[in-house]
Amino acid sequence: MNISVIGSGYVGTTIAACFADLGHNVVNVDIDTGIVDAINRGEPPVHEDGLPELIAMHAGEDGTGRLRATTDYSAVLDTDVTFLCLPTPQKSDGGIDLSIMEAGAKQLGETLAQKSGWHTVVVKSTVVPGTTEEVITPIIEEASGTTEGELLGIGMNPEFLREGTAVHDFRHPEKVVLGADNERTLEDMHDVFTPLIADADPHIVETNTRTAEMIKYANNGFLATKVSLINDIGNVCKEFGVDAYEVAEAIGLDDRIGEQFLRSGLGWGGSCFPKDTNAIIHAAKEQGYTPAVLEAAVEVNDSQPERLLSLLDDHTDVSGQKVAVLGLAFKPGTDDIRNSRAIPVIEGLRERGASVTAYDPVAAENMEARFPEIDYADSAADALADASACVVCTDWDEFAVLDDEFEEMKTQVVVDGRRVIEPREAMTYEGLTW
Ligand SMILES: NC(=O)C1=CN([C@@H]2O[C@H](COP(=O)(O)OP(=O)(O)OC[C@H]3O[C@@H](n4cnc5c(N)ncnc54)[C@H](O)[C@@H]3O)[C@@H](O)[C@H]2O)C=CC1
Ligand SMILES: O=C(O)[C@H]1O[C@H](OP(=O)(O)OP(=O)(O)OC[C@H]2O[C@@H](n3ccc(=O)[nH]c3=O)[C@H](O)[C@@H]2O)[C@H](O)[C@@H](O)[C@@H]1O
Image (cartoon, rainbow, N blue to C red; front, side, top):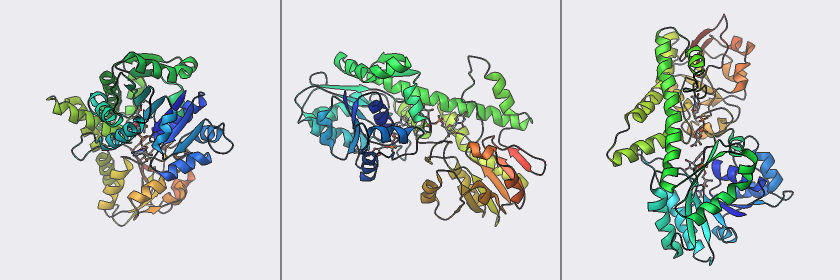
C-alpha cells in the first residue's frame, strides 16, 4: 500500500520505517526540514534502537526507495492511507492541546480537496474520547469538501509502543486496536496491518473511534497507576525497613498482578504518562466525574523526587558541594528528557545550592537545553570524581557495573532512585524504596 505519515517524531518515524519494512511505500511529512533531510539521507532523526538500520535500509541513496520524507503535504495525494502522528501536548490547565492536530487536519483536508478517489485518514496520536469524531472529522470534511463515509474514511488506531524499544514493540504488538465508524475505513486499516498481523499474530480489537481513544488512556492510566501504586507501597516498605523489590517479586508471581511495571523508585516521566493521565483526568472532570485514583497516581508520582532529595538531606548538606546526577533520560534506551524525573531532582539540588555535574550516555545534549547552567561530564567516572554525593535518576545498564569509580568521590553518599547501584562497604547507600 501507499502510506503517508504526518508528523515524524518518535512515533511517526518509527511506524513509517516499520511500515516500509513490511513492504509498504511510505512517505513521512514533517514541517521540520532537519528531520526530513535526516530521513532522506538514510539517518534516524531520533535515538531508537533498530531505527538506524531500518532507515538506512529503506531511505537514502542506497535504500530500497520504500521510505522518503518531505515537507510537502501534497505527497499524501499519491497515497491511500494517511496516519496523523502529531503531538498532543498538555495545556497549562492539564487538558489536551489539540491545536497542532487541528492545524495538521486542516492542511491535510485542504490537500485532500484535490483528490478524487477514496482516502482513509487514521488518527494515531493519543486524543481524548470523541476527538476523532467531533474535532478531526469536521475539520477534514470542511477543508476537503468531502463527507466521512463517502470518499473519506477517518479511523483511530492508538499506539502502544514504548520509547527505547519502539521498533521491537511495533513489530511485536500484543494487540492492534482498529477504531472505525464505517466498513471501508476498517478494511483499509486492516490492509495496512495485514503483513504485521501475519508476522506477529497479535490480538485484533475492532471497535469504534471513541472506544479506541479511551482504550489508549485506560492503558496508559492503568500502567502509570500501577507504578504509582508500587511506589506508594514501596514508600511504606521503606518506613518498615522492608525491601520493596523483594515484595514486588513475590506479588508479581500472582498472575492477577503480573511481574511488569513493579519497579519502584523515582516514578514515571516521559512524553506520555504525565500528559495522558492529566488529559484524561481533565476530560473526565469536564464530564462531571473526578477520577480519584488517577489523581492519587499523579500525586504519588510528583512526590517521589522530593522523597529522594529528603533522603539525601538526611546524609549530607549539599550546599556548595559537587553532586553527581547519573541519568537524565526519562528511562534508559532513549535521549528523551521530557518530564524526566531528573528535572525536579536537579531543580531541588540547585535550590539547595549544590554544584551539579550530570552524566547520561545519550540525553545530556537535550538536558543542556533545559539546564545550560549545570556541568555535564563525559562519563559517569568524571561525574563522580570529587563529588560529595551522587543521585541516580535513570536505570542505564552501564551504572550497574560502576565500581572503583565511587572511590574517587569525596564522600561516597549514593541515593539510588532506580535500584541500579550495588551497595558496598565504604558507601553510604540509600535506596528510595528499599
Ligand atoms: N512517544 C511515544 O512513545 C508515543 C507517543 N504517542 C502519541 O503519538 C503522538 C506523537 O507523539 P511523538 O511522536 O512522541 O511526538 P514528537 O513530538 O516526537 O513528534 C511530532 C512531530 O510532528 C511534527 N509536526 C508538528 N506540527 C506539524 C505539522 N503541522 N505538520 C507536520 N508535522 C508536524 C514535529 O516536527 C515532530 O517531528 C502524541 O499524541 C503521543 O501522545 C503514542 C504512543 C507512544
Ligand atoms: O503512550 C505512550 O507514549 C507510551 O507510554 C509508555 O511508554 P514510555 O513512556 O515510552 O515508557 P515506559 O517504559 O512505559 O516507562 C514510562 C515511565 O515509567 C517508569 N517506570 C516504568 C516501569 C516501572 O516498573 N517503573 C517505572 O518507574 C519509567 O522509568 C519511565 O519513566 C507505555 O508503556 C507505552 O505503552 C505507551 O505507548
